[in-house]
Image 1: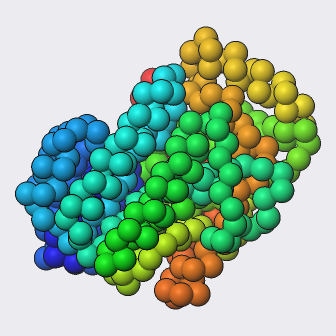
Image 2: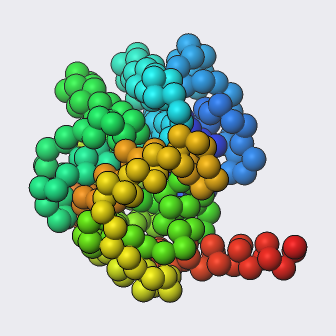
Length: 323
């Protein structure tokens, strides 16, 4: 890789990928595109632009990348689903147009394991050939499912481009801070929806970007799940983080969340539709990564969770000491 362009370069995934690229390929020149200016892990060149803007296509055409990685996506839920979907889907199609025009050697898009949907009949684990079935009421997951149909069509249209997409599970590590990490770490106790001990799946930030880099390095094509071979159930999560477990009817869990979301209460930064992903499994098997590319995960789900928990406790203790 000589010239690498990354959309969403200032985000969590993007910053980690830039740092990984610097270590693995110091001579690679990197273009970053984001609505937020870089504060760390700065690329060699940076364009501040909305992913839906024509400026994105102009910047990519000027840079002439041999590799494009599309990470720009609204992750944290917002209260305007139409706007969120417009950014995610129209922005992605804007990048697709650049890929059609420039025909880089490789193009990778970050999808998500949520694209499978959270459903009671999901196998544990899910392999890459399992069907995608959108949870339409949870906008982030629905948008990921939608753009996957489009990237499959793009891959068929451009056989000369190594088109690939990743489906990571919950990304964790010391640096993570989003609604999923807050949901996992800050609740004073763990609730089992309808008494079901649902499995959660975590991948360490370093493993996620290392897997992404390996897919690019190998000019691999198609979908790749990203998640280690173990998962953590809700009761295991409670035990590892020294919290108590209670059974709760799922409808009450959703009702309380809807109340908090509607009133914008502190800590209520996700809609009740997200709770389907705490009620039904979406654990994956990284079959293609491990069997075809020989990729090995350095961190288990449990190790990733414990690192997140340790960092959470450290920050909480620091805040108390500063009061």
